[in-house]
Image 1 (tube, rainbow, N blue to C red):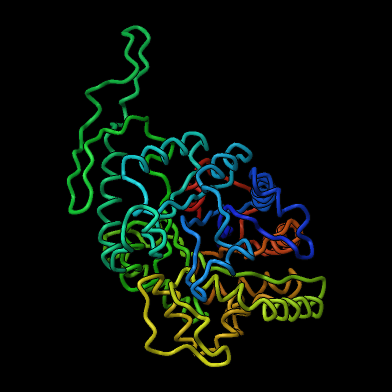
Image 2: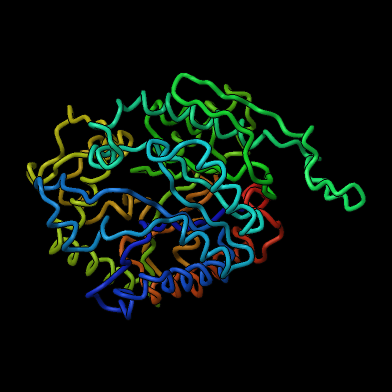
Length: 432
């Protein structure tokens, strides 16, 4: 069996001015569209909804904000922790993961926020740990730019150590609620961690009660060499990509080896690969939908390239669309993603309009039965642990195709859950 999650590309306008957009151009503003999306995912027994975030208006593509604002991608965008609260209140089983950058908040604030959300969701909250990658975001928080790539991970190691110290500052028996003595909390069960690391200081103790999970679930997306070591040390589930099934298998095995080196059980880390299935009532219909999707994205090439540019901090407008990227291209942004793009040796146009489907052997196009069979085969080849479905422009129509078509086909094969069995997100992830 394997796990299913949904990667949401931010609390932003999901789809507008397209077929099946409906009212999503405005219905996202109060979270209503995404509450509907979360309820649909829960109907499909997904493990979790992961909400990406960024705190800047990009201008890397063509040196301008114009393309990003034209498409409503990356901006405007709301705070994901607010959406996590709304989704948690509207669902009973679905995990909710909110992105917060370690470079944009202090450890105490983050520790308190996540424990509060763990209570309000009854143990279904997760924190997507990002270190920051874009200089514009750093400048919004009073810095000249982002620290060096590997240094950011060193800082995040210290950040998590501080947060864990705060989460552990309450003993298991601290809350006594003894009516006879009139004592709510036994003060002797609290410690003052006084974390004083190389990058962060915080006194403690935390001023709120530990949540149902103790420590909220941690998520990471680092696939660079330094990112893999960081993920293997801290993460409960990892957002991963790969240009081929062989690459996916190698990445998962590498992370599991790093986890074992850290003294962790590799099975406690679920590596989830991003995919965007294209479904139809017949394989012919699905292939035509895929062709039309590529045709649309080819017309709107700046949409795809600007999205890739913002996370890799690389202005792709300067390169020939019909040539592979230069092999010596580097970045202080998302190194793993840029590495995958460069090493694929595919023309830039293909990366912009077709990279969501992966290599030919990993393309998920066809009837629900066909795609379900392909996904089961892929997991068998990779070794686990699951898939993160996604769409840059999600619609209710697409969600229904997935949950009412693909998920039942997977359930009939016995490869995904048919019912929830665990009360917390961590329990759901470790169920199998």
